[in-house]
Image (cartoon, rainbow, N blue to C red; front, side, top):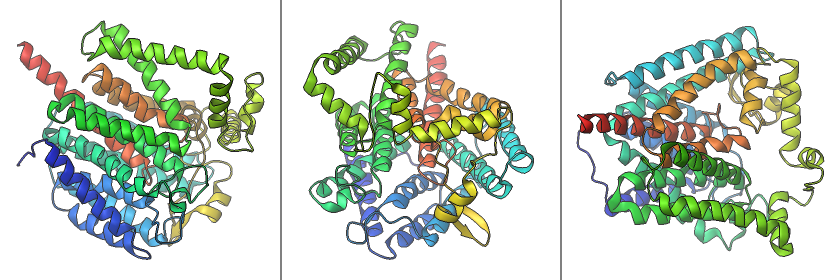
Length: 462
């Protein structure tokens, strides 16, 4: 197996290839179908291509053509092809043998236990079994696909992370020309959605791909400057989306980084003499600026409000939360969790799933290919869907992935928290049919990278 050298030329080639398929996807009527068809065929060749095509397909699904009707949801055919791509990549992963390792065995044990819990919940607990069964099967297979492909490409892990960073960079480059066009703000005039169909999708995508860029920079000194610039550019564009979820995720990552710096006491912490004090000063400075500077406070509150119909009152946080765009979801989810505390209401569903399926879902032959659930806060959503008992089967799997990822460095640990942190405001944790699949691919690549670094360090010490 030939390993590609990580150079600027490699990065440019990857970005150019992604821009090409994004351009084809922007062709009105059948552009997405053509690209997904190409990706399905390519995914059948090698595990490397399967992983790259799977990640690229996630982006294509959310592309909104600036030449056609803006902000239109994916067609039934696009949704079908998206699932075909995932199953093709999964099938390809089964034709290759994963080299046995302690990390892989532990992950598989945790995955099997979690899958059994999800299926039990779907068949015997769920208030909407049809939706829950489909979601349990698709989530488990999508997760296993990401896990196996990450392990199968372990020797080319840095290249895979570079590809994820190139995905975000390509989306950034394709979105820049739309800054002055109405197509770039098709969903709302004051929120930038770029080449994607929704500002929130662009925000969380750039947050995750930017994190991948920074992790790759740690292991690719020859690309460090280019990747840092690319990562910063992606994170800065998030401000134009007015998406608040990435801010919460960044705050979580910052807290994790400071904790890692304290716990590790300088071990495996890079540029700590600059980043830690600057981070603390920036956080304290922002808090003081918001509190005592009227202009900064007003701008900050406007950003938090996001929509004119929302209100932010720090003196009455419960009222502000209930009137926010995510507040009603949190209260509804909390009510569902209180009604079904032990076993939940059902995996991937809520009390309105039947009406949501009729209004926003996609079915094919009675099979629910898409059944969106708006539960924007991961801990509550997990308890509401799976209950306390079911959530106990999810936590070990997630903890093991995090434990493997943090073996790389304190920065990787923090950036893992950043990627996972998008679920504090945009629940994509169980959504392998959407951008959640890209999240799991990135987290699995982080975990494999940490596992490789751990054994390399042990070998060096011997």
